[in-house]
Length: 193
Image 1 (cartoon, helix red, strand yellow):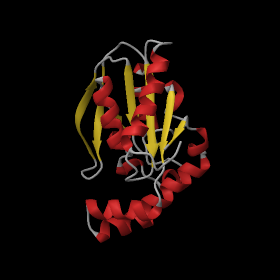
Image 2 (cartoon, helix red, strand yellow):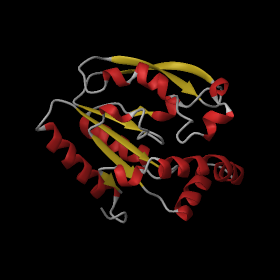
Image 3 (cartoon, helix red, strand yellow):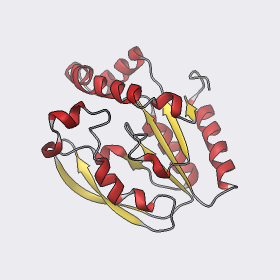
Image 4 (cartoon, one colour):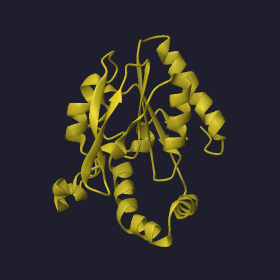
């Protein structure tokens, strides 16, 4: 699909695919992955409004400081606590059971609250690392959002200051690219926008 299409046009293409799947099955689990500032949250919000659901954000599953060992941080996609996701979310995906999971706050390195997900025909898992093989056994649709380096820099600088971007460029960006490359996220996605 053409990356130059508007968010509305891209959203409609994904919506149509979800509707097609819903004609065949009771539940659809959709995951939206992509680089920082690629538009994952915007797309998830539009889809959530359309299908009346609450997205599950992978940022709620960032790894606590105590688990961020050098070996784990060197691992592709290692910043996500995929073991906790497997316990607190995976068993409930595509079911009619409500569930709750703990929300991890990266800045304070604590669990700040819980989020309850009510049953819905569509479940959205949104965020970087959402297509990690340890997370996606129950997904029906994989959407990957690409972003070029200059647009990404511009968007990150709009959200913060130059120090934030430099930190991202030195730490997070290499981890994102390693994850995308090791797991062939782009090629394995149903939609690349």
